[in-house]
Image (tube, rainbow, N blue to C red; front, side):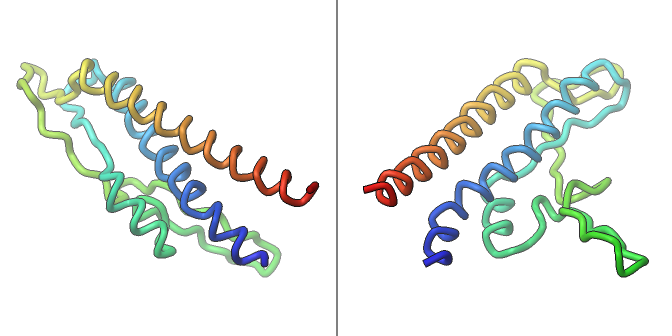
Length: 135
């Protein structure tokens, strides 16, 4: 029974994790819009989600080393070069920065809307399960 409940929520949970990682990358691009030679990065959502559904760390993330038996295992996150792609600039700049603020803002807003959708779906699924349990 619990496996069925977990499977039901698994897709949207994994999608939220990947969306969160992508939001962080896009925010980093926006924050570095004026940094000379900064190269805009992005993450391929489709392939990252497929990897996450197969059990791979989100965005090829790093794992933490545990040196003592009392250490807790950490959750994978973005490493320095964790499966991120460079974004191809629409127009070059003199300082070598490839961040296009219009494209970044649009991608950030699109990702935020999809993130909100996944939250709403999880909420609806939980409310549906509670309605069934309560009769």
